[in-house]
Image 1 (cartoon, rainbow, N blue to C red):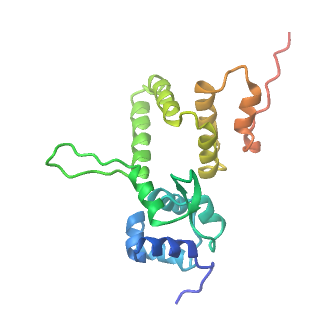
Image 2 (cartoon, helix red, strand yellow):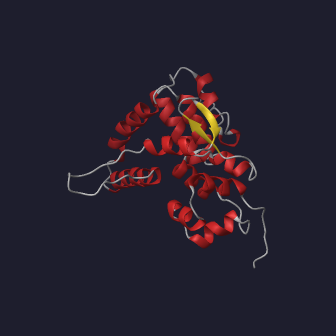
Image 3 (cartoon, rainbow, N blue to C red):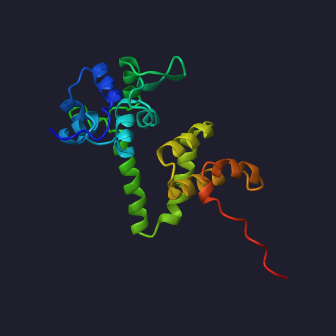
Length: 212
């Protein structure tokens, strides 16, 4: 048996216990190989941010808590409490209910895309627009769509970007543009600083005015 490099991840075991699934079944749910998942749960490998995100998207638990403490109770958002509570079959059902099913006709199979699937399609839409040199025309509509999707929960959106991409300048820049174009007035530098505050390494120095 391989030598254990890390502590076993008891949160992952707790999630499986709630869902009544085996390690093989859970690996299939996540779209990863069984040996890879097994190595993470049993402590042969550490949990990566990418896998933590997959688990969060699949079952609704907090990826930040998965990465923070292996021995803690898995946590998830609960509709009635409007807060984070211990993960349960009910929070899992609420999470899954967010994803609608689609059928092209009454005779076709139903499709229920995952969050990761939608993210890949959004990426493909932008890549397609770029390949046809239409990105400049598409981006204003794309930013408006994103702003409508975020709604008034700007704080929640910023927190998600910080949680998912804490060291990613590309994500920071895109977030600043989105908020700057749709929410934050140009004449409000204080609000702009609130957006970039969690990214001190990425702040740009103010440009000096050109010499007269």
